[in-house]
Length: 373
Image 1 (cartoon, helix red, strand yellow):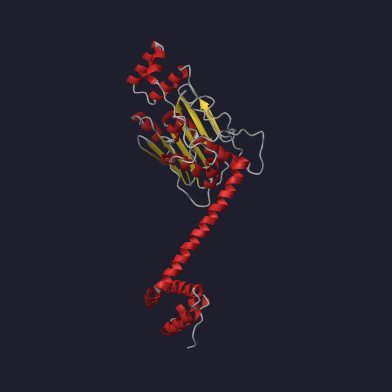
Image 2: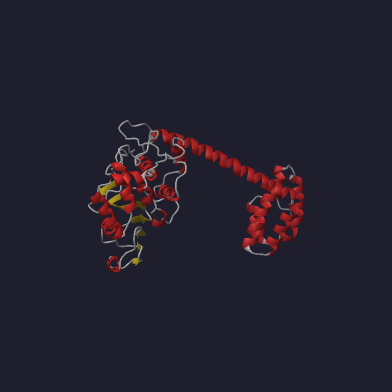
């Protein structure tokens, strides 16, 4: 199965646009802000990027064999032309500028699906569009990590690979950025390794819009007012971008400064983090198990009562439950060095149940010592 999902973010589709989108496929479900196409066989006969460019603001492709693709449409010029420069993403990302819209296309066609099926949704990813327009490049860094992992660059450092700076606040990814990491199968331990090299928060940018707007030429002011009257989406972001460019002491907020860490270093650190997390999880599970054994030891009568109730149901499920609890009682006895007490109580308890062949077979399979009949 594979799906094509589209969404609008800035404004709903018009009636004419709805009709045009609905005519794209007999498998399509369309609303004024969303379109979903699912195929069990066959194929979508249109270029999804062209459909995105014409009608929508976001596009997600996903198949049960993998090959994820996420593409976003932006008002022209709201992102810098050099957006993905310095990331070495040519095989995985394109940023194409058009007269009215620009398209960021993230495509991992060779990526296989994860071991467990996950239903990805464009709704969980679409806010990446707003984040990029606000100058938040953490999602691009997630894509860079995915690309390096895809190319297997973790063995040794490569001086020819551009290393982008770790963006600030990488330890606090947004829900959309986490969803992108899941889509591109970036392990949590790799994200954690990068976060170790990230500044805690992004530097604040105090935009003095009231002062900057005086630098805007009169014809540009008139142009913005006309576009505002036509309810042009994202106009405020375009205005602020232009004002920043007019500010003589402007910084470049779209490109963060940060530590440039080779992927091989991050990969090695991620393995250390994963080993520590696995050790901590084993210790946590062991502690939980010890507490459970203590509870069984302190309330043995209750657990023997559970065994009685399960066996008397006379069903396969009941027998399975009884054996499970008996195994826990036996393990508890071994842990507290009371094996003889358990065996004596078990032998007395099991005597009337030896006429249940299915139950006896389960006990024999689990090496319980049965009394002679």
